[in-house]
Each structure stands twice: as C-alpha cells, then as structure tokens.
Image (cartoon, rainbow, N blue to C red; front, top):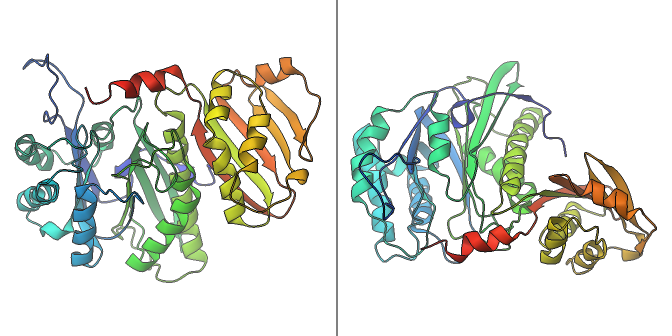
Amino acid sequence: MIYNSFKSIDGGICAASGFKASGTYCGIKRPANDTPDKKHKNDICLFASDVECNTAAVYTQNKVKGAPLLVTKANLEKSGNKAIAAIVNSKNANTCNADGVEKAQAMCDLVAKEMNIPSEKVIVSSTGVIGQILPIEPIESAVPTLVKELCYNKNAAAATAIMTTDTVKKEYAVEFEIGGVKCKLGGMAKGSGMIHPNMATTLNFITTDCAVSAEMLQKALSETVKITYNCLSVDGDTSTNDMVVLMANGLAFNDEIDAEGEEYNIFKAALTEVMANLTRMLAKDGEGATKLIECICSGAKDLDTAITVAKSVVCSTLFKAAIFGEDANWGRVLCAIGYADAEFDINAVDVCLKSEYGKIEVCKNGSGVDFSEEKAAEILKSDEIYVLINLNGGDAEATAWGCDLTYDYVKINGDYRT
C-alpha cells in the first residue's frame, strides 16, 4: 500500500481551510495527589468549522455503545448530516451510565449555547474508563475557555487532549487537487489499547475543505474504513466508543463531488492516505508495544480474502509474542493463515519476513524452507516488521497492522482503572 502519494502537510485537524481547534485541562479525573499548581495534560478539546459541514460517521460494531455515539448519531440524523463543531474528552468514556445520554447531550448543548449554533450540529465523543459517571461540572467550566481559545493552529492542543494511554499524539494531513483547485484533508486519532478490527478502538476525526456531498462523503468513509481502521488490531478487544467522523466544509470552493468518477477517486485516495497513516501510527503506539507489525497479503482471489488473511496474522497472540521475542517462528504465521475464514490453497502460500535489515523467505508452497536463523534474528531486531504473504491465487492485495505483545501490556491494563 502507498502511504505518501500526496504532498504531506502540517496542521492535522486544522490543515484544511476554515477549521480551528482548542484544548485544555478541566480535571475530569483528578489524581489523588493533585495540587492547584500542578500541570496536567489536556483532557478536553473542541474543534469547529467557520461554516456548516457535510458530515459522515462510522461507529463501533460493539453491541455496547457509548452514550456519545448515540447522541452524535441522533444529532446527525436530526441535522441532515450537517455539523459545525465537535467536543471530545478523555479520562472518562461516558459508557454504561444511566445518565450517559443526558451528559453527552449536555456537552453538545453547552457548546451550542456558547457558539450560538444549533445543538444538533455539535458532535460529541468521549474516551477513557467505562462505567464511571462523567462529572459534567468540569466540562461546564471548560467550554467557555475552549470556545474563546479556538484557533486555526491549535491542532496539537486538541490531538493531545484525546490521548489516554497513547504515548504520542497522532496527526496526518495532505494536500491534493480537484479540478485544478487545491484542497486539504487532515485528521487526528487516538488509541493504544482495546483495539481490534470492527472499527478498531479509536477516536478519529478528519476534516477537509474539499466540497463533497454528504452521500459521497459517507460512501468514501465507509469504503476506506474497511481497508484501514478495520484492518488494525492491538489486543483483540473492540471498544464501545469507537468513532470516525469526517467533516467537509467546501471552503476550497471546488465543484462539489456528488457522484463517482475521477474527482471522487482522487478525494478517496487522499482520504485513504490519511487514514492509512493514522492507522499505522495507532498500531505502532499499541499499549506496551516495542514493534509495529505490518502484514501485506497479496495474490488473493478477492479483497475480502486478502483482508481476512492479513488480519488473522496480526491478531495472532502467539505470533505477536514471537515478534516481541524476535523469534522467526514462521509456523505461527502459517497457523494463523490456516484458521482464517477464507478460501485459498494453503499449499500455494509463500511467506517472507522483512525489515530495514533485509528480507528472508521462510515458507514456500505452504512448507518451510531452509533459512539463516542469524539473518532472521537480525531482521527481527527492527521496530518495524513486515510479514509478506503471497497466496498465489489472484490479484487482490490488502494490508493489516498490529504490534507485538509485551510484558508492559499486562502491566498497563492490570491497573488501568485504579
């Protein structure tokens, strides 16, 4: 997969014209040893467009859905898929709470009142601990500050605010042309643990100044999620609060994309590049991870087969553990391929391991081949490992992303709540 076919630019969520952001600390979950003069990471953010946006969204496939998802979905239905602003908090998922919907709606109402916009044109999202009541008072105090401090270059303040166990903020943006008009598209994401295909376990927000109809926006987002975020797995847990929101304000002033064709394909390619790069960042920053695993399955009879096989490998607990131990245990790759729910000839499968230190074939036609363990160990020392699978049964290809399984993953999640 190509990750840099467009010019990458700075700005993240604020890269596109007319989008501004802000972030601050409000104390949603105050540490026990908190003091008035102690500095904290931002835990709430706001981003907004100068004008109304066509908006598309996809949500977690978990049957348990966070209250913010329910409110956001209802608001977009009420507004006709239009939005102007989004408020997002970390530290508390506002999920499995009796007053969750009430609190999520209150967050929208607070922003709407302060910005003088309809409440149904505000998106809300939350991430953090499940099952703990969200205190609304700190948010009430923070909203006026968030609105007042909205700025066209505060994307980093917003990207930092949505982090939980993330160790780095995740932003990516590109520039592209539609009909001779320069357009921009950028986004931010969070996620480190509780990540698995079916809308991964992440919050993802993408903005563009390209003019795209709401219908085509939703089509592009749904198709791109399938080959990016839904091909991501850290630990096999599908979150309750996963969400991807895509907002288009049209301030690039290109002719609106309202049908499939060359311009739609260019837009979708730009969207794919941003989402693929954010997906890769999410995998590399998996909780406790020391290595990124990128599995590329080629030679499949169709896209779904390629996706299924690639995902099966990055989801294998045994293979993830082997990568952590830098052990070229290729049998675990074949095992994971073998239980993938797809049809192909296992006796035609080839597998190679690759990194910046070289490439080595470990399996040919479904059977092991002689290879240098020393060379394999050298390849696996890298912090980015590629698993190249060729099913030799067609022309379709797909990529899936994951990470190794380490001792630190257990440490992080052993006392995550307390």
